[in-house]
Length: 144
Image (cartoon, rainbow, N blue to C red; front, side):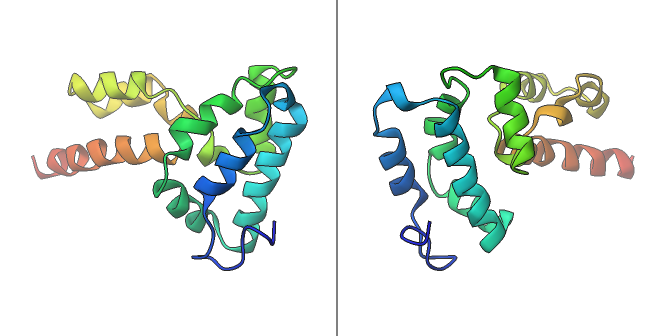
């Protein structure tokens, strides 16, 4: 950990994940998942979840690597989700943006997002997208 992360602004997640996912696919198992989550958890504990999210935003790690973490050998999808929760990394869990994108595209009202429980399966990317759509909608409703 200390080899890759020295100061809040002095680490490159892209480089770390390039190395981790450059390893043989045959080792992408439960231990591989836990190593990834532990590494991220250490960054979160040492600096903050916001610092971690900032670094995630500066890369394509979420789309390029995190979806691959959902297909780890020998561990079921629900167990993978539980591990993200266990490490208190729910906001990094890869989420399905299709429903959120569809609701936004169709200019759906706020209650449609609630009815579809979009808030249950969000990460920082999907939450940001929803809020960018919903907050102005809410504010305009308040003015009417």
